[in-house]
Image (cartoon, one colour):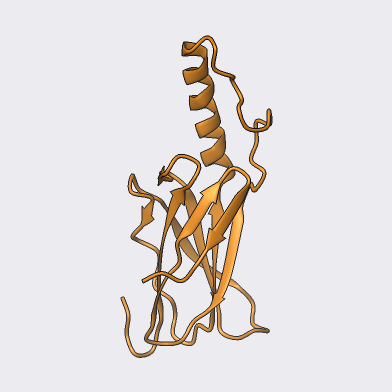
Length: 138
C-alpha cells in the first residue's frame, strides 16, 4: 500500500542459471528511520512459483532505509538435490557440474536501499550460484 507518508516495497527473484523464477526463497524485510537508527525487522514472506513476493509487510511512517534479506542457501541446496537426481537418471551427466560444493557460495543476500515517502520500490534480484545483481525496477 503506497500513501503520501510511506514508501512500499516489492521484489522478485530470477534464477539466471536456468532462466526461471526462484520459488520458495524466504525474504525478510527490515526498516529504519535514519542512517543511525536501529533496524527493525517487520516480517517476511517467501517467493511464489513466479519468483514474486507479493505480501511483504507495509513500511512504517518515517522509514528512510529498507533492507531485504534473501535466504538463498536453502533454495540452492534444494536445487542441488534435484540436479543430482536428474544426473543419476542420465548416466553420462556429471552429478555436480558447477563446483562440487553442496552449499551456496552466497548463502544469503542482503540488499539495503534508501526510500522516499510515497514512492514504490520494486527491487528484483537476479541470482545464480556464483553471483547476483539487483536494480530498481518498476
